[in-house]
Image (tube, rainbow, N blue to C red; front, side, top):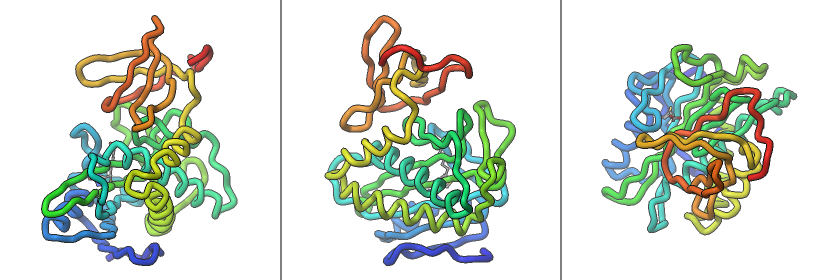
Length: 263
Ligand code: BTN
């Protein structure tokens, strides 16, 4: 069993597991059986961790693998909001965990829609999934590279201990759970999304940053302008055309190519 228990906000229950296929899949099985949450599902390791766009999320010992199951009361598909909200909450949790050890964290930032980076390297990812059977719930999966990171990935990746802070999964989960509770309360089933959007923009890269969006069907390069009122990514192409995206993988321009120029 897990060594130490995290401190969770009042009213949150915890299911802690040594191993599971995926904490998101486990939370979804509980939802299908009628669980309405709030429930955190936490595992020391995953056999079949899920990433965005059908990718695999590799299990490295000492990292955080957890999913929050919550009831939803909004009518629209909340997963776009929850992607950004989870990024903001994970950013705040990591910053709080580092501050607890009297350390700052240079270069901590968000990348649309749900990546937490240090500099250009991925530190954490989130995976919100919604269902309405038998009731409307969301499962928000969170993976944070605390102690190590896979070395065989296409993009740059890092882990927290490489930057100083040594944070256990239990302590990290305590910070993540507190930050999620804070931002879910502010989001208020969608009514408070402007506050989430503002917080996301404060923690993201600067307007004018060169980016490329890969939608699976096309790759579009341009400059980051911001996000629209619903959280869609806004990009300005070289020729001046403005594009918005609700789906896609964003890559930053190679190091050295700065975000000069105006958005
Ligand atoms: C991404 O591709 O960036 C999202 C990664 C999300 C990984 C977490 S680990 C805990 C939870 N369970 C999963 O199977 N995936 C998420």
